[in-house]
Image (cartoon, rainbow over all chains, first blue to last red; front, side, top):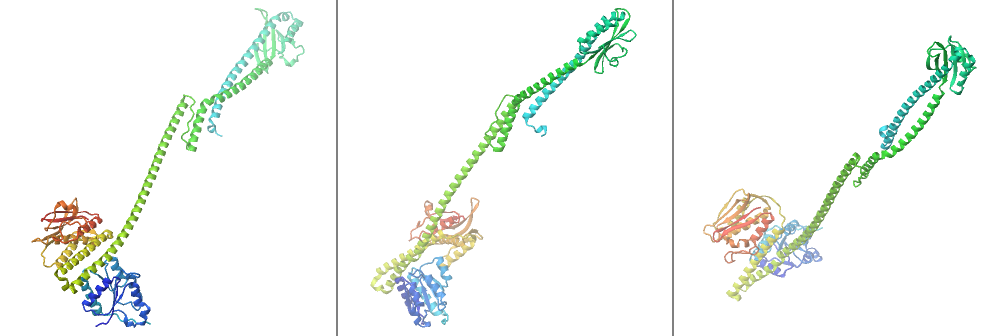
Length: 148
Length: 491
């Protein structure tokens, strides 16, 4: 089993709790790192703390909400795609919005997937399960880039 | 300067002076001719009379050859300064006596000439026979008179004539100067007026009228013409001013309307932006708590089912159902809002294709239902394909839904003639509706059936109508309870 971590960027604690529960109920036991806003996500990915960790410590997938305090999801995605080290990191947008412009902008900025959180929790856990299965098990992760 | 270029005043004056001068000259010439002739005649008469008197008196001297008497007789001619010479010849033709006594021999004829009087070498001469009454001729008398008297008189008359001519010409000139004004003045006034009109474009001037003659008529006609031109000019100016004013008013109106339009469009833009932000926030923020309510209700149902008991679980299931209905409601409202602000990208759309697609989709979602679809082929229209899909999806889905309780459900998509144009229609044999409430069909949240009968949010037909309106079309419905419904729309 891929020991990769999941970086969950989500400001709503309810959504964090429900997402974690949904993942766990389908036996997805990977570590989940929660960032409560865009700034935390960026600090985790690029901050000084990150420097001390090994390259291999990059999350297997980032579950990214769009509407976030401080730095919004689109900006986080832009930063991830702009950095040589995280350019190929799988990013799944997981959000409430199904606004067309958000979907278009998300894909344009290089999101790998765009999932709308359904209101129905049963559907939501199904979605979480599929995401976990796909990104953590089925998907062939990109090779870890070497930093100079 | 050529005569035709002279000012009219000079022409008139010259004409009058010339005519009067000519008349005077002719008169003077006729008078002078007559006077010359009559003077000569009188002088001749006087000379012959004198000759006859002297001849009668000299008969005795000749008869008796008395030279002294004869000389005495002739010397009486002294009193007449004009008689320059006199000679008495005897009957043989020899000079008998001469006057003046010392006259040169060659100054008088040596022998008498033919009887009679004639003008010769600037003198009037005459040979008068000297006869005794009724008897033989005694001799001949010669008299010579100069013409000084005639010339003096003639000169005097000439001087008088010239003076009269000069005075008359002067008078004619002065009179013509005075009188030509009656003709030239109105013409000059007309000319001046015409010039003023042509140089200043001033049609308000009028030529002064002097009399009722032809010039007066001309002046009147000219003034009337000016009056008409002035009137027309004024009318033109007024209509131009009116036009300009109307243009200005219209421009002002247009500007105001433009301003209002700009204002409105700015307001619309602001409202649209607000609606955008609102819709976005609804889409994102209102659904989040719903997810929490639904999610944690499910958590309770899963983890605390025993503690909750059957009644508790039922309550939570109702909470979840309501939450999910609200989610759908929010989604439908969002769709309606999107339809309102979506930009319409018109292109050719095959509605028949769309309808078949949707029918297949409905069938796939509920494979156990048996519905007869009758879709007319090749119905095409111009419009936004995504929005038209929403229209057909809503209408066909409605038909699908309301035929659920029908034993042999049938759904039809076709077109009909409507006021010379094409109207599309979606017909079913489902639950139908009461025409009394036909106007409520397309209102937001307006439903003619309870959620228990047929589920729904009451937003679908409102969305459909908004899309049709935005395409410039019209939508209406016909139906009867349990007889099915037909929705017509134009694009």
